[in-house]
Image (cartoon, rainbow, N blue to C red):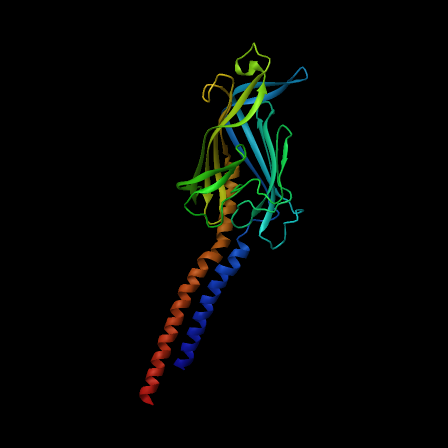
Length: 331
């Protein structure tokens, strides 16, 4: 009878270990993926912002720098299921991001962008080939990319499942290249533990544009060639198990630097801080809690199964050795 019990223990132990391996190394990679058909809206807001707005004056678009604005930036991310890279059980998703920022008081559009890219469904990094990738900005410029080239490299929408305490490459749409998202510590966002990452960009030239002289204090010049400089500090709070962004704060400044000027002495055309509002953060937290609960079945339970399986197997082997030893003595 004891021999039978020992075999049962060994069998149960091996089964538990095998099930743990199956959950962690087969089920987890297949299930820990971002959706193909995402449909998500997030809203960031900020007060006391300086921004360049363009308003119709007697039918003529006229730029004006306004201070102490309250801005709302709305971002809508959807999945594009029409792209050739998309397969139901595949590892690539194609997401489209539409963002517009408006002045709350006037409703005037301050900034807008539209872009599409392909991303690895587990790591969150941009991948190629990607037929539909492009960037389009408010002025109507659309930049399409070679399908075999990653146009918007690094992380864009989220961090990897199982985010680590290290730096990551994070794409900056204004710079059109990646910046370092540096691990900066841990925080709790509405009861959820997060990793805090920070990106920082010193004043960097991003564009050259011709503007009315009156816009930058050169009233005697009908138009002036200027360089646009951009600086930014972005803080991202990431739920590490899922890689989801729960909260984001964006402190930015843009400046037009005219002839004879240097960065820091030009005309500020944007300066302010935008943060995801409470409604968006609460929705992100609720979704993260739901997803981490499901993922725990694939990350925590395998460890439990390995421990239990190991104990059962060792107990079964010890019992079998004892039974065999006693059998030899009595035999």
